Image 1 (cartoon, rainbow, N blue to C red):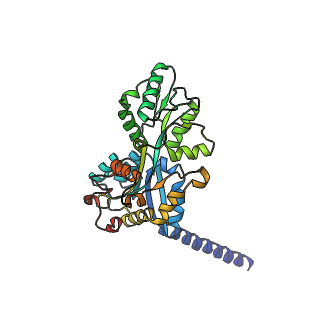
Image 2 (image 1 turned 90 degrees about the vertical axis):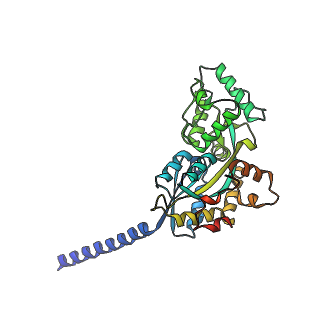
Image 3 (image 1 turned 120 degrees about the horizontal axis):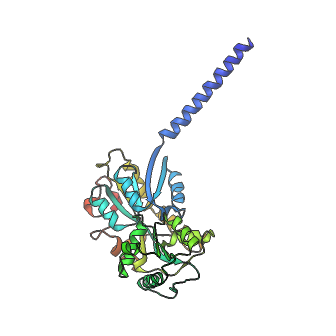
Length: 328
């Protein structure tokens, strides 16, 4: 009798475990998922964690971010390995749209890049107020000190690397040729990893202000930012849905819903306020309000000049007809 009772109890326990496991399995796998391939300079700051929590609190969606450089993020989306990209390279974004892989682009946030380096400032760039002059001085110092590394580049086809090449070109240099010189170190990896290497080896580099401020506040680096906000240092982030006609399995409707959240007043306020209390200033700023103002503030004019494609954040031919509300 006791043996029978034990068997019944064991069978009951197994049944309960199976039912509980089945419910957990169903809840996990039945929950819809949004894959967002994004840049490390945005992910490393922690802002996306805040946005994820806010969105998931009102949506039964599992948002998963894949932090890589902008170039890799776009490649993943082209393969259909992401439903949405959040990136910061207008040239790469233009190609992504033009080639038919992306649709319904919306500009969501901005901050600035800066040149950071060791407090000792061996190249003596402190006080220079022009990025081209800063880079010219760094090259001069590097070529005079070929026995050591002076500069570190990401060289990963990221948005930051694209900006770096743009800045070098503006200063009259070819980034690829510079990378062959002995004082020029590469690759640096993601934004956070590059800053840590610059700290370890006392090197100069390009950084977005958001990641720089976060790592500085956390005591992970004591590098100095040598340049203030400037038009040439503008850093603009855009969200682009993956085109479902090219990758039929992607979650287009969820991607559009998430973009709508990103440009909502709630999320724009999250972006505006993120880091203000902890770092003394916002790590990012929203774009929706300034782009709607008339007349446009100076920063909106900069954003339009730098990031608009054919006079628009998303030309009509790249707008999916299922999401016209994004442009009302």
